[in-house]
Length: 314
Image (cartoon, rainbow, N blue to C red; front, side, top):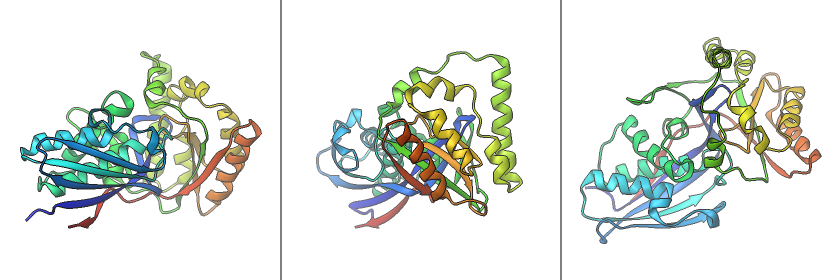
């Protein structure tokens, strides 16, 4: 017998990690969203309640809400003649570049799958969760939701058909993150990207992305850090984050192996070898750098985290 209520949790994530645009993603253990889903007797109706971090900025209308889109698509897929009531408890600030919408989408997909007894496999769950990104990014993309669903580090090896590879990062990988008190709309951050890139830039980024993966294979955080240089996406978005170059410079000087914009921003994420350097020291250095350009920010330290999971059934 299927439960009448399911609660799931999904982690914050960081996408791209430099040159891996729309391909790389990592789950972070520092922040998470929780989603509680219940069946109702209102056939086909999705009801949404939201509380927590930045909840006042999130639409409650199902067609404009990440979780609402995912729940509606799964309900249609199921053929069940019921409605769904969704309560979202936000622990990840919307528009942070830390996969806020992806966490809600992944948690919703996992919860509804269990609630309705759909038996979906991980790739199917990711495909449904990716539809939720339409609400924030304007189109479905799977990097954040794959990391939020599966945990650890993921590579989107194919978009159509969707294929996702999960890798374990070296045990000494940590992340120093700083979240500035500015907002970067995800759809805006995607709209400023170049429609075409020159061959030399493409070759550079492919080399850097390959270097990041080589660093994982070699269990070498410093090599991973060398792979975080992006000369296509980050320069196009740099003007959206005042002080970006100063913050990045400070991160490297304080001992980070690599540093880049987290997802669409405005968070900045630095890769740290915990055997050589404290992630907290790097995060505080980046916070100080933002303060020097007049921007307040919040430092966050994280390790690679687990994926979405059910924490309650009734």
